Image 1: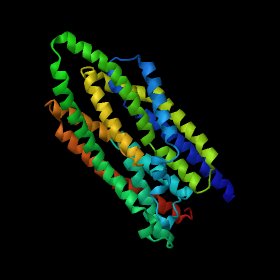
Image 2: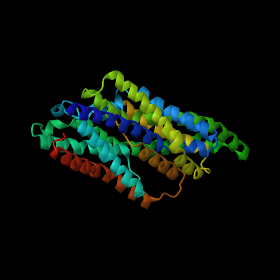
Image 3: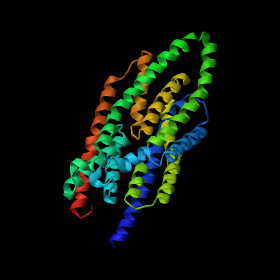
Image 4: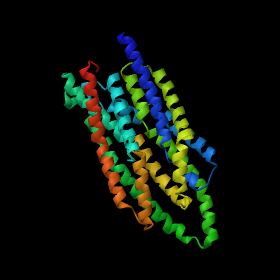
Length: 345
């Protein structure tokens, strides 16, 4: 009976991980600048974007961010392994918090929510099990680097965008004379924007380690083998593609309608800046929030162009970002405490 329950739990976790991959694609807004600039037909852009994000997931499924989420955050006290109940609790609590935020119209980070849920579960597990020292339950160096990257990455996105625009404006854009030269330049930037968006989408997929991290956790505790992990990773990539193609189109079309006045050169700088940050974070195995980076890239562009910035809205967004981690941790810890009181651990 216990074996049957464990098998059902494994199947549920795999299905939820694949569903999470779909939601990653469904919430991706990277293509908005491409659609707004009218570079490609809508469906073709969705196919290219979905393929790129799926490719990024597969290419970096062997380690990097998935390994951080699925193993590296845990210390020697837990032998770098989650139990299946821990993984289920992490998924449920992070999804619940994200859904609540969506209904409330609050922009939340799935990365912050998932890492917060992991921290909450591990703390309660360490206390409730008795044999696990909280001092060795976490890889505190890795956890500290992850949290630090959440602050450094958006600031870096802001600075890179600001500097790139200032440099391009001084040495290139300011030298364009007349409407014809400007229009000719922007037509060239349309194709550069396409390349930048594909590059960015690959790193969005590579850094979105939430789904693959859960699968890697299953592999590490022996629930699935490496061949199964690779197979399910491919499924996650496919469903991320489907998420973009069938669900993200609504978000992308809405955002694109507000970006008609955005020049391709501006979109190019923003996408390159965000892609650089995502690439560096991924290669350092640090899960960061793509949406946070993009927002600060846009702010960097606005300030560089001396445009007005909604600091009040930015302040509210910052509060939600900061609160996501402790709320997700508390929710996950409470849920795991309830489950463990029924003998599920």
